[in-house]
Amino acid sequence: MHQQKKAGFEAVTWIDAGTRNFYTVNKEINSPSDLKGLKIRVQQSPTNVEMMKLLGGSATPMGFGDVYTALQAHVIDGAENNELALTSNGHGDVCKYYSYDRHQMIPDILIGNCEFLESLTEEERAVFDEGFELFNRIEREEWDHAVEASRERAQKEQGVTFLYPDTELFRQICLPMHENFLKEHEELRDIYNVIQMLNEEVE
Image (tube, rainbow, N blue to C red; front, side, top):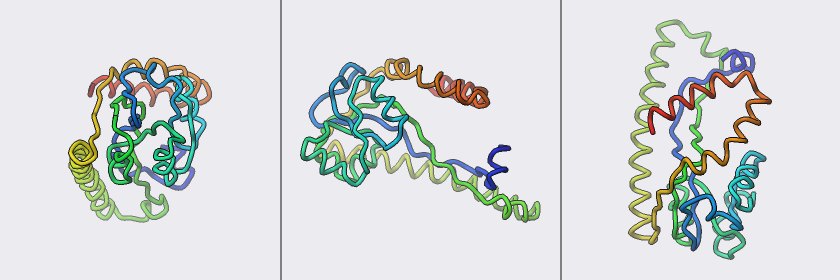
């Protein structure tokens, strides 16, 4: 929170963006070993490249707009994203397997300008806080509906098969990334531990 304030912003609520999972053209991903040798499009970041390296796949960073063409041309064997990306962008027309490995969960954060928020009266801030809570609740409800609609479309219209591997296998392989990150950012270890505790509660 202190670092946020120092930067001039405050995180006021979060938005559900689901989980990122692997989807592939013609190979089922039931364990990390199934990724071996596959070219998987990832976001253009060192973290995602390292993740794929640990899992045994070949990371292929590229812009999101290039993924559909790359899948069609077999430049890549698959990608990783949520269900909406699978259907809304036509990836499910090419990729026939969607594997719920849940390797990443990336909530979006709604931020507010500190100067503006601190200028509000207590009554005004209470109204905003109520709005933030309402926004969070409705967005999560709408997200669940959108995911269900995407799954139905993927199965019925695109012929996608959904797979449910043991997510712990993927998590264990990626743990060295966690430790390397925490060594560089020891101040975040307490937050990391809370997140892991919450993960255990919802699993």
